[in-house]
Length: 120
Image (cartoon, rainbow, N blue to C red; front, side, top):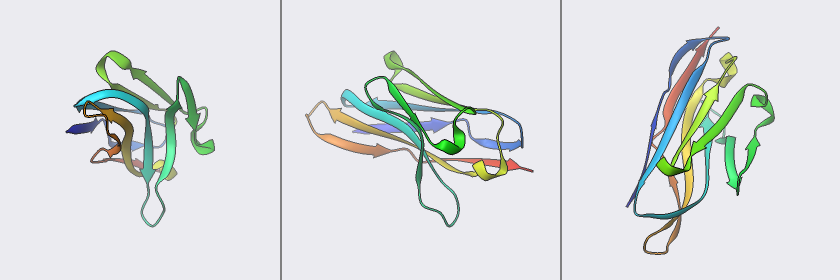
């Protein structure tokens, strides 16, 4: 079993900052990729930022220059520092990881989601 546990969401005023964390635990052999997605009401889930291959990072155009993804490999944890937040950043943020388990199965795991609300 693999679990992704997210934390750090909340309510913030426009222009403010939040930091999200996602820790992976359980039967992990290796983590192939890890990232953050978000889903706003009535919209499709979209990639926000991620380590999708090796050490390179990918960002949605809408968050470039405002959000920074980082990771602690020793803790199987990624972080999303969100600065200069805008009301349009309001969404449920989900952590995703593509993991090779100790049983040698590749699987995509999702966290439970954390709500980020930005008031104007």
